[in-house]
Image (tube, rainbow, N blue to C red):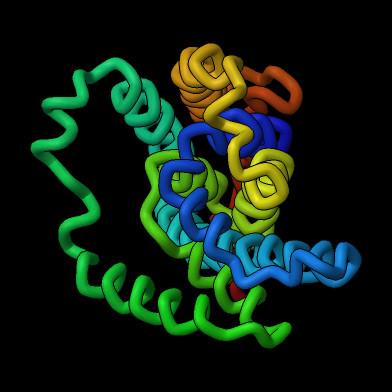
Length: 234
């Protein structure tokens, strides 16, 4: 599952660049000092990874509470089906149900905070920008969150989101250093076609995981705790 998170981040970054790209272009980097610039970019990525990890912990705790009610396997299957539907259902229908609407005010506050940080040039600015950037809405981040939710463990979910974030680093770093990379790179359309296939495969993995077929690492059998009802009364 961790590998699937990394692949989702790696391929998905071609999609998420529409949201994060403009922010990356506007980073107040020191272009004269290459070592300092690398340090600033590293802080930016660290902030994003921290945000993703926190999201993983939060949704992992929610998944754990569902696990305690014996719903983890069902949840895994539902999330797998939902991932596949997000790819197969026409965008016109999905746009009718915009999941970001209830949190528009929060998003607005994040964007305002980002605007203030982009005007600064202190070292902590880059960490803060990356951290706030990690909470901005993105379809691929939603997919990763669904995966973290299905794991039902805050630590595993945090690691899942961390590896998703690590997968986005190569392209995001390229964007920071080469602003015209996407405009002259003809592989983007091909990657965009691969992303839906990747999401469907990950969705199928979650369905298999929920089915508990006894396949090592992919679909392990559920662990059932047997509690004896025989008590000795003295």
